[in-house]
Image 1: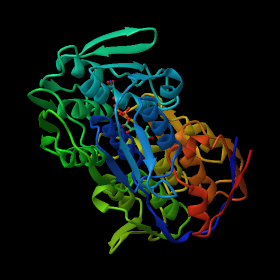
Image 2: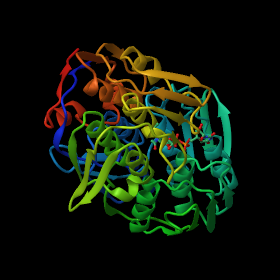
Image 3: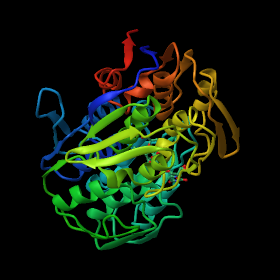
Length: 420
Ligand code: EPZ
């Protein structure tokens, strides 16, 4: 298993190109199942999760063809000849469950493995299933799989999500696009990745109103056609590198980043003493003077994203004063805390909240990644820590960050990947 070695203490400067959003690319690839024609996606990030989704879609008999050498443009389309999403793929990537709605809508059936446990929480899919049942699906759980059929096709429904689930909103939006009649999804999640998916579906011929709001109205159509779609830049990658600039006392231009999508993160960073300014082709991030503690509570978009909590905690660990971080989305998303404390941070967890008391400096040590955003948090801490930090199990990092060590090294970080 690869590791990443960092010698900290060097302020970063330079520019980093922000890639396409992982959490937009995954549902958009699943949307490729909604038509026989070719859906072309550009600005595709080169990530392990994209490779996993590619193998899952190929498993359904639908071709995913790279249109360039790097694979940053993909063409998806074909006839579905297998409606099973097997456990050995789904257990590696929970987002595999996003094929459920498209398979039901196109093929009238799906056998999708239940995702099983996840480090950050139980992450059930009950809202996905209830919504699909309201649309006429017959769902049976057996042998660790969701067995879903739509014997008479899917029909429109009025669905109220008890919580604004990102995945449920995406699955139901895709299913509703081909359902017979009108579907309203109330209390829908509003993440930019959902708006990106909706815009792509509209380009494919779907009829969707309320994009960007918490109420989506879909008039189902009989078929969708091919389209070309450029994936929205990754706001979590943006926030992660913004924290890298801040924690090292440097200055980074994050090219292609969008301030609107960084919303609450930019506001919290400003409170902590980090300036984020819009430039012609991205965002300039720099620490003004000292870093000071600023509280953050994770919330559905447009609130502070749970996917930024671990990275922000690393930043707060070297701020003056204290910060309270409250995690309201997942029940176990503080696994980075003991590892940050090994680097000299002073973080205490009390239930859903963690109090971070800033220290003058962190000191390098071997640490272990436990999940995607926790691994990013440890890299950030290593950039600031005195001495050497070795982060192991970086396969977690590779799921959601393209060539992080290369991007940081080009901006002055002393960081390298240790193979094997
Ligand atoms: C998406 O996961 C993201 N993944 C996650 O990013 C992100 O943390 C999460 O949204 C919240 O923003 C992708 O987009 C691929 P949810 P998802 O359904 O869809 C509960 C990353 O680091 N819930 O909005 O699984 C659930 O347990 C990953 O890139 C139900 O109870 O998130 C959780 O507590 C990690 N029943 C909360 O809702 C359901 O049917 C939010 O989950 C569905 C969800």
